Every structure is written in C-alpha cells, then in structure tokens.
Amino acid sequence: MKNARFLHRQRPVVTFRKWGRKGYSAFASMHRIVRIGTLSVAYLIFALPSNANHTRMTATTDTVAAPIKEVAMDEVVVSAQRAPVAFSQTARIVQIIRKEEISQAPLHDLQDLLKFVSGLDIRQRGNNGVQSDLAIRGSSFDQVLILLNGIPFNDPQTGHHNLNLPISLDAIDRIEILEGAASRIFGPNAFGGAINILTQPENGQNLKARISSGQNQFLEAAANSNFTFGNVSNRLSVDYKKSNGASQNTDFEIRSAFYHGQWRFDGGRVELQGGASDRGYGANDFYTPVYPSQYERVNNSFASFKVISDGFLHLNSTFYWRRNQDRFELFRDGTNTPSWYKDHNYHLTDTYGSSLNSWISTSIGKFDVGFDLRNENIWSTVLGRALDKPMDIPGESGKYFTLGDNRTNFSLTGEYTANLGNLMLSAGFLANHNTYMGRKWSLYPGLDAALMMTKSLKLYTSVNSSLRIPTFTDL
Image (cartoon, rainbow, N blue to C red; front, side, top):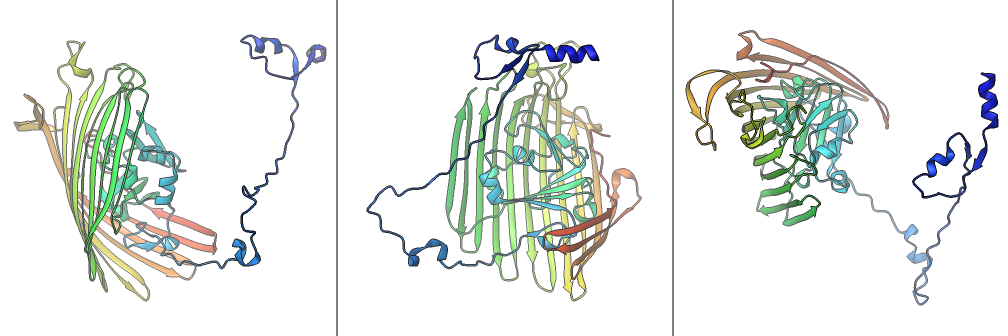
C-alpha cells in the first residue's frame, strides 16, 4: 500500500486546457493526474424595446396591475370506482394524463407516452407502436386490463395483442391509470391494475391533420376531426404509418381508423364507437433471436353501444364486440424453411360482452350493483380442441382452422362508497363464474380508504383480492 501511494505521488500532474481533437488524445492522459477547472458564469438578459417610438407604458397599462379573472373549472370525474367519482374523492391511487399533456409531448404513439409514467413497464418490440407489452408495478402483460372508453380490450389469445388499439394519439382526451388489484371495479384480468383510455367528441367543427417523413422511407399521415349535428357530437380519426425499417426485417405498415359518436338527450346520452386496424411488421428478435425472419400480421376490429341515463337511479348499459385475427410466420414468406416447419400459425378470436351497472346516491353514500356477461371464442391452427369440421380462415386462400375453444364469464358486483369529511371509503365485492373452470363461483372482496391530511397530502390504504382468466395460450 505504501508503494502504491508513492507511485501515485510520482505521477505527473497535467492541467487540462483545451480539447486535443485527435484520435490518440485520450492516451496522453494515461498514468497521469488530470486537473480540470470549472468556471461558473451567470447571465443577466435585458429585453430592450426594438423601436424608440413605441408608446411608453404607464401605470394604467401595466399588465401586472391588470385584474385577474378567475375561471371555475369542473373537476375531472374518473372511473376509479364502480360509480363515477370526482378525482379528489378517490380512495385509490389513480394517475391521469390529460389532453394538454398529451398534445405537448413530442411523441406520436401511445406506447411512447406510457413509458414516461411511473409504475408502468412498457416493453416495446419495434418503434411507432408496432407491438408492445405493458405491466404495472411488477405484474405481467397478461395481468393488466386495457379499456377503451370503459370497454375491455384484452385479447383472450394472448396479452401481446392488448395494445393493438385502433386509435391515434391525437384522438385521446385523457388516460386514467389505476394501480393495484381492481377486479371488483373492472372485472377479471384487472389483476395488477387497469388503464382506461378515453376519447371525447367535441362540440363544433374542427379538423387537424399532420404528415411526416424520415429515413428508411418512413411516412406517417394522420387526421383527426370533430363535427356536430344538433345534439350529436362525432369524432373521427385515421392514421397511417410505414417504414422499411432501420435494420433487416424491421419494416412495418399500420393502418387504423376510429369513430366515437355521442348523442345527448334530457336525462342521459347514447354513445357509439367502433374502429379497425391492420398492421403487418417484420418481427426480428421479437420473441426469440434464433429465428430472425419472423413476421406477424394482425387485424383488429371492434364496436360498442352504450346507453347512460341519469336521475335518482343511474343506469349504464353496454354492448360490445371485438375481433382479432393474427397470422404469425416463423419463417417470413415461407422462404428457407426447414422440413419440420409445416405452416404458419393462424388465430381468430371473437369476444362478445354486455354489462349493466346501476347506482344511487343517498345521504349516507353511494350504492352500486351490476353484472357483466362476456363470451370468448377462438379458432386456431395450434390452440384449442379439435373442431368437428375445419373452418375457412378469412382472407387466406386454402387455409383452415382445425382447432377452437369457447368459454363464458359471468360476474356480479356490489360496492358502497362514502365521503366522511376528510375520510373516503369504498368497499365491495366481485362474484365470478367461468364455464371453463367448472360450476364453482368465486368471491373477491375489497376495501379502499383514503385520508386527506392536507390539501396536498393524502394517505391511501387498499386491501383487494383479484383474479385473471388464463389466455388460451396459457392453457
């Protein structure tokens, strides 16, 4: 150790003065002590008038002395409980990304936006929203429920398709992120949390369009429009992206369209939404680097109808349908395939659902009851049980589904919420039955509480049980 210190003292000391800008400059500092000095500089900038003839400001025109106009804004109502609740009265940890924040972000897809949210884990396979998996606080991508305007979007085949949403970032009004077990609020699959993506048709007429291009023949074109007819507000958005990819087999092409209409009447409203997307992409290293020529083509479409009535008894009835068709090629275009590779993997899932939620507000709190019915079908060449008769694969000539499966899930829910001064309480349950798991009913209770300590400090506690229905890939 003494020798080491002695050698250290014998090393020459060099004072850094400027960059050498030579490839070998770094070697000149080896075995030497480099002394670097820093200089702190403060700048004072004055804004001077550009024209001496400008009118001199007087006390009557001083903008600082101008009266301040206060504008009362409605508080955001979120879906952190079975019955809608003001954001300040939630008893759960909820994060909200508002439209203003979305529009100011230098991003063009939902996945890039969610990467900046604390507690979320986004694992992207390719850029521009090609394919991504999402997890909350250590959950898996199969344990997070994705909703679009309250409609569940999880795919029963695999969670890899959960973020295949047919909407562009321009159409999103806000995003609500609920952390922790939330099955008694949103139903099965909200195991680690739920993300509700909301769009809102605006009154009036407006149109926003953008187009961009870049390297590797990247092209993006998008348009978002709002138009109103009487009491009916409409939002329509379309989006197109393509690129040849920065490296081999990373090309993609994505088309999507989305519509959301809202008709308001005395005592309620009717909502209709629908969309479709078509995406094809080279899946180089997506699932394994052993086969770099993977390719995937995914078609997605959905529609929903919702009726909401207000009054002493609030009712929210919903009907929805979602289809996802997937073709996965381990060897793209069937080139250079080994003898053991017989054919690509084909899947088609159809999901139908309906729900009815009702609540009343009383002097002692809100009472909520509801039910949800969801049927899931899958047809496949590798998943499920043998079909009695092969089924044609839509859009594929000479290809047939030989396997399939079906299951139905039924849920009953109940919830009570109360605001007792600075204390907020929410207690409820989910009773669930799935035909794939036999005739047994399972109960999942939960309790949430929040205490407002100050205007800027709230304490939360939450105890909930939750469940996830296995995907057909899991089974």
